[in-house]
Structure formats: C-alpha cells, structure tokens
Length: 453
Image 1 (cartoon, rainbow, N blue to C red):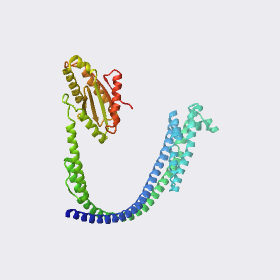
Image 2: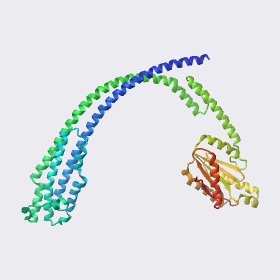
Image 3: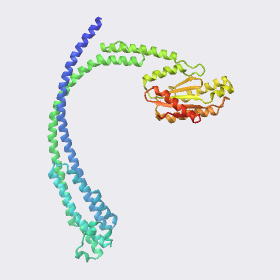
Image 4: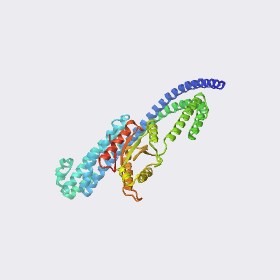
C-alpha cells in the first residue's frame, strides 16, 4: 500500500512537470512556426526568382533553337533542293513552334517586362527574317520546276518580282543562296542574337536582385529559428530522458516478455503495472482456453486428423479471429459401394489414404478434419479467392491419384465444395460450402466447385 502511494505521488509530480514542459513547448512551437512561415515565404520568393530565371533561359534557348533550325532548313533547301528540308521547315513553323511556345510560356510570368520585351523583339526579328527565307525557298522551288500546288501556302502565294521571274534557274538558285547566306542575312541573325543576349543579361540582373532581398530575409528569420530550436532541443532532451526512464524501459521489458511468450514483469509506473496485471490475467485465460482446445480437438484415431469436436472448437476460435479463410467440405464418392464390395477394413484403408493425401497436398498450417464417416473438411487460414486455381489444382491432383491407385485399393474420387470468407468462420460459411458441394454432386461428382454467392 505504501509503495503504491509513493508511486502515485511521483506520478503526480511528473504530470505537473509534463504540463509545464508542454506549455513551454507549445509557446516555442508557435514561435518556431511563425519564423518558419517567414523562412518559407523567403524561400518561395527565392525559388520563384530561380524558377523564373530557368523559364527565361529555356525560353531563350527555344527561340534560339527554333530560329537556328529554320535558318538551317532554309539553307539546306536552297543548297540541296530536297523537299524534305522544306517540309521540316514548315513543320517547325506551324507544328513544333518552339519560338512561339517560348514567348507564350512567359506570358504568365510578367515579373520582368523589360526582359520579356527583348525576347519578343528577338521573335519579331526572326519572323521578319522568315520573309527572306520564304523568298529564297520560292526562288529555289521555281528554279527546280516544283509544282506550286504541292508547296506550303506561304510559298505558293508568294510572288516573285518581275526581275527575278526573268532569271534563269541557275541565277535563281544563286540569288536564293545569297538571300540566306549573305551579309544582310547574317546581320539580321546577329540582331536576333543581340536581343536574346539583352534578354539574358536583364533576366540575370533581376534574378540577382531578388536573390539578395530573399537571402536577407532568410538570414534574419533563420537566426531566430536557430535560437528557438536550441531552446526547444533542451526542453525535448529533458522530456526524452523522462520518457525513456518512465515509459520506454518498461515497454522494452514487456516486448521481451511477449516475444518469450511469458507473463509480463510488473515494472514501470502505476499505469504500466495495471496494464501488466491485466495482460497476465488475459494470458492465463488464453493459456487455459488453448489447453482446453488442444484437449477437445483430439485426433481421429483412424485417420490421425482432427475430429468433429476439434472442428467445432476451431470454428469458434476462427469466428473471433476474423481472418480471411476458405472452407472445403469433401465427400468420398460412392464410399458405401467400397464398404459393401470390399469390406469395412478396405474402406478404412481408403479413408486413411484420403486423409493422408489431404495432409500432403495442403499446407502445414491448414486444418484437415474428418467430420464423420466418409466426410472430410479442410480449413485454409489466410486464404483468398485469388487462390481458387491453386485449390482446384490440389483437388485435381488428389483425384488423379485416387482414380489411378497403385496400392491395390479400389478406385475412388472426391467431391469438393469450397467457399471463402474474409471475416473468419461466419455463420454462412458452412452453408455456402455445403451448397457448392451439392452442385458438384449434382453434376457428376469427382470435382471441385466454388460458392459464387
């Protein structure tokens, strides 16, 4: 009695300390959360600046790649007159659209209008340059005698000057090449590159400014955060020591006892002692129940499998455990004819053979039962409907052995009904299995059927 009072006083003192620690921890947590929000905002601003910079770089690359690709394809067509180069050019222009996509993707990010203006200007200059490329490709197509009806709309509708129409094919090709290789074209390309460079420089400077501002906010917030977290760490350390001494250590003792399958040692605070005493009471009751189950679930003296009494006990236990399972009800087909024709001694040998085959073909943790006479059952624990094929194969294998005896016993077969339950041995499980067995018998016996609901 005195020991209990001491533990009760100690427990009250610990609770009081815990309440104080919880209150202090809550205050510190609120302060940490507040600072963390500020850090998060600063980080988001920094991340947004970096993301915007990356988007700008991608956009610039897309404009450059798209423009250079159009240039390459226009030049290749004027050089080789291959229609594939012309087709690739207009596929990029109308389908892939890398340049247009770059500007479209930046429309939702107007943080830096000046930089975006340079990119739009680069696209505008690239579009202006396309007019020279169209004209060069038109000259090449006319020089090669291509059917204008098969040409893209831009080429087909483009009109050559009267002066160029008078040129011979070779001169047309030379002029086309000059249009896309000449100094004027190079100057226009340089202007596009210059605008993209301005775009790069402006985006970099804007990103740098945003990073400096965000870094300043982050530095101040994280300094406060470090102070609060340090205080919180000390508080948590004290709490952890108390938890280890008053909770974790008793739990470790209990886990060891459970693994060793023995009653719990009485240790720890009042709540743990109460838990241990309650567990030990349940442990003793379960041990008694298991002993009673083992006694009642005796084995059939003929076949060595569980008898009907054991089956009834198992069904009660499995009703409580509510684990997925399957029940098989099994009849030895025309067993009466075996007894009548060969005698009961031979019939007993057949029953022992059936029981042995059931044990050999099903798992060691499944329960093989002789319900009485020529009726057997198998309880498969942790069995799911996905195992239907496996069960059917097991029954088929047993029937093949029984129908082709090599031991001098008469030929027999099994009729098997199967039902599954996801919630242990329910009241409907036996009835459903018996219904499945009835279907087998009605359709010629020697087989296996499953209850479908």
